[in-house]
Length: 298
Length: 298
Image (tube, rainbow over the protein chains, first blue to last red):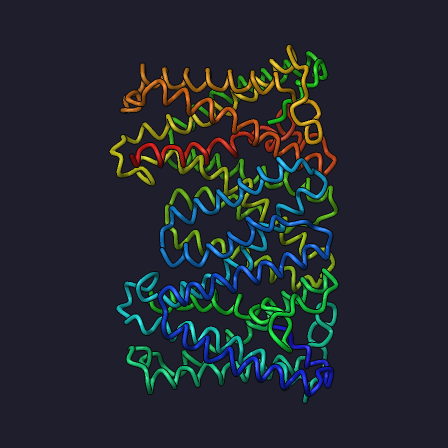
């Protein structure tokens, strides 16, 4: 997620207030969806994936690339459901239909100029936004899916999802405020000139704190066996995810810089687009998923 | 596969002789690999996928795009093995490592200019060549894999693979000669000016004949229950695959035209690159796979 505040005072007080308001609406909604699970959770991921891909297509169009909107968006909207249904044959079929379908559509449009970029961009947008976001679904249903052997109860999935999202958001918020307050040394001037080393340290710190609060909350109030996860492991995982979140944020900065755009969209008041909000989670969700597979396999 | 001969006399006699020689070496090799199955078969697909992606990267570079060679090639080389091992978790992990890995490499290279095109092109090349080619592995091992419920014996997999490849090659050869002899009406002048409607009809005709010869051969000499596949179904499937092969061929023409290159490579004497040879099979293999899933599910 964009840490434009790291630019030191670049964000007006009114915009900051809008951000807090957006958060006050979104955070309870997201927590509710994580707790509820089932189809409302998958539907939320499906909708966010489609909106995110739509914004990604905006970046492509800014580069003069004309992606295939219908196939790209419906592919991304479908991926969380494919992961939810857990049928590998279906996943393969979706891949083939999206790929071969977009090739044939391009063929019948008869435009060869820019065909490589259009087809590549369409597949990449769906994979980057829809594919990586779908790990949020894999996490939520891991006790019944990839971690079925570990004997976790279903509520553990809610913890994993909340943990992965909290580390991402904590990293964003920590980077924003600590960069604004202490930012001095540039982190990656060629990719995102506003980001500082001090911001990155604050990101890791608040991301870790966020993850641990989440861990403590589930330990105290949750009914699942998640509390058995040792504090040290939770802290290490949270710190790793917070660091990975910075990479996710930088990757989207890379794309926006390539496309010479500041924000990917304007859907969230005060915060830009959906893609600007989820870019960190696109990295934390898959990394957490594979960490859990390793941890519970031992 | 390229039907440059459809351009009427554009192919010199010496080049044609080279093509026959190449075929005389390659056809027995491919038939042996299909019969043998096991790791030599998968290794052949893995090698062809890597060479094909390498040629695809050449098309990208002709467009000024700098793909990530190591990740793109190793991803394509790995995909046939992933299908062979049949572990969906592994497939997901490969996807995540290829995608997130290429994003991080791009980040540390610090180049934002062209990042979208480079990352898109890398993923697309691996998916287009490696992903679609891997359906050849899925076909060969379908009796133990996706069609395990159908009670086919393993030799049926050899038939499916040979059938899918024969229809593609038959379509190419039929298109080449009938286009050269009868070609008059342009098929897709904006994409591939050399291709004609007459060539396409010849492609479907010879592709169907090739598929039926293959069906007859297995019926007479094979030990599998494949002979129970009715003649009408085999003919319909072969005609469909031969038509689909033309689309696969046109898609690669689209790419070459976009990149303003005539051939994707020069590895096969007289025929251009590996990509120019396999482009039809990239379409026939997945289409046949899903046709079989439908047919044997009933």
